[in-house]
Length: 298
Image (cartoon, rainbow, N blue to C red):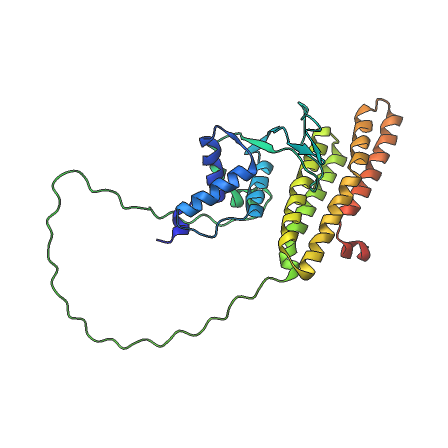
């Protein structure tokens, strides 16, 4: 049996690891533990940090884990011991700036969606997913207790000579993914974040604004990590996505202040003015999330 059939998928391992360590841990610790687990199963090339971040992001989207607290950093913005983490701290909204270590807490270890985390996330956003294949048992069931069965010698069977089958045709190597295919996951992430703006416009709340900021952080970290490994045109394209994310962060205060003004409105006139300002802020932030090609087409 291949070793990858015996190994746990990332979602199932994240659940078991959080239960084992007491329910709370940070992403880098989970990633190191999964690499050590795969190595113990005989798998040399484990899951990369970007893949683990994606699985944790999906778990947060489905509510399987929630942000618990932030650790006290050794330095923040280049200042040693320059600040204490406040009690109501939210994740740092700038992906390139030093930030505290974020801890996440598991909400329900008995949730069956952990086992097929990726498929469960796709189902949650309306994508059809085929049913899972039945798992092959790692070891056969032990025989019942009692006397061991007697060995019976099998009669020798003389096999007739069989002609060798023709050599199978050579299968061409799969083509490498194109630049657009490699960038597609990041653009899909930008589109998901852009949909959050519509939710904020329909029902503005500070909680939705905080969730919008946190998803930008996660996507920004993934883009920066991928750009460090990329070369040539792919690196330039990832740099453009990173620039769009940074531009979005530059306008996040405008979005937050518009939401706060809308929530503070009391009269119909105030609500109308605040709603217009909020729509304008959402339009400004949304333009940063749209790719350059779509902006030119418009």
